[in-house]
Image (tube, rainbow, N blue to C red; front, side, top):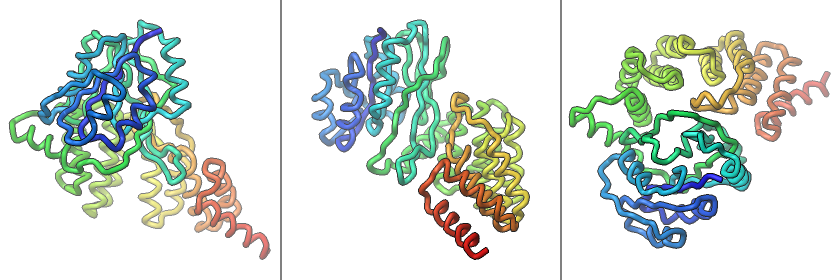
Amino acid sequence: MITVSLCMIVKDEEDVLARCLESAADLADEIVIVDTGSADRTREIAERFTSRIYPFDWNDDFAAARNYAFSLAEKDYCMWLDADDVLLDADRDAFLELKETLDPAVSVVMAKYNTGFDEHGNVTFSYFRERLIKNHTGMRWEGAVHEAITPVGRVVYSDFAVTHRKTRPSNPDRNLRIYEKQLRQGATLEPRQQFYYGRELYYHQRYEEAAQVFEEFLEEGQGWVENNIDACCHCAYCYERLERPEQALRALLRSFAYDRPRAEVCCELGRWFFQRENLSLAAYWYALALTCTRDDSRGGFVSPDCYGYLPCIQLCVCYSRLGDLERAARMNELAASFKPDTDAVLHNRAFFQGLAAEA
């Protein structure tokens, strides 16, 4: 059986750290906590789980802090978690099975990261992240923010997931501040960091600047395919908010130059035409979304609703407005097969039942 070092960087996490460690501590063979300057009870809580707690002078570089934590690990594999992550019971079981069965020749274990949820707790947004990294293989974190490790060697995709459960908003300006500090100091952002810089500008509603960064990122042609597709979508979001709808449409269509259509993009195209009352074309793109195969292992951001519920419920609306009520009712029931109790499904069902009763 492999051994695992749980390596975490923390700061002022007294509200969530115990929850995280209670879900993961017994899965690891050692726990390494790197504290980047807590002023609350974080260290006291961490001491309940491990004596290996180390200070780190924060220097606006998440990769540096994570690399320091990994450098202190002594077991076969390093596993990272953020303090507001948890492993649910089913994922704990899957993780233990992985520990017992993993081939030691594996270099990196990818695990799903569930970060978005609806009101019922269903996952609405997820993606795979490098979660276990074989120790002493030279792989290092890169990026002052949105840090990542480029996997090398043999990579496997696991059945366990990590669930990200925030209890409070993080500092919304931190990442953008770090990027702009780097740029003022003359740094050149490598493609992945350039992509995330564009996203930070978008989050801060600096749409003109964000669109320019995304366009430059795409023109340089050095990005990962999934980031390219996402950059096209974010360009479209920027242009919509800048009231340039035709540029938004072209940005979405540009995504097809990088790979086969994603359901997420098809749904965005459906929305674009729906907003302009072109219901036939909206229905075309929503129907195309239903033909797209979901493949989480490609590593990109995944919105599960786009592969089922969302296009079905939108097709129900499109067909209803186009006068095809029978087809609309069928699409509503297909939407119900994905999410049976949503307000939209129940409202539509009552509407169609009422029409049937009047007939």
